[in-house]
Length: 175
Image (tube, rainbow, N blue to C red; front, side, top):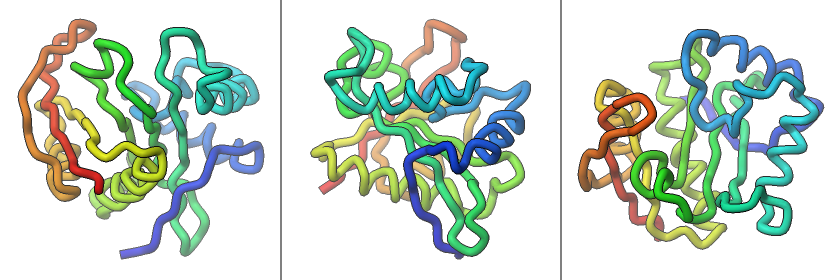
């Protein structure tokens, strides 16, 4: 397995991040901190930076840290993830959880999601998150396997009011 690592998004990775966004046309990009919805990269980067701090995070939102996942061998971006520092909204508690993530469509089925989630759990630990809630839609078998491979324990299933998806909720002890 190739080595992966997480870094904060930056202007230096603009072209790669925008190409990543483009690869998700017609598919929801999880863990991108609204990358898919924002047209201006610099505004998105500022948004990501602001969301990381309680002082600059939008009102009634949980501070969150966004990372891009880089493959060591060629320094290529293969994924993105977002870690919510705490669960302060019903949507986060019931549907989204602490960590959202995605892998580039061309890089799936290589074990990268499992490794990226393990790296995100390490980052969550540095934030003091010792019990991590992660969710996956019932149709997303790959994500379910990723969560289980990282120690996820199934708790229950809830319905996403936005799209009707059945969301499986898992907890990971992150000690």
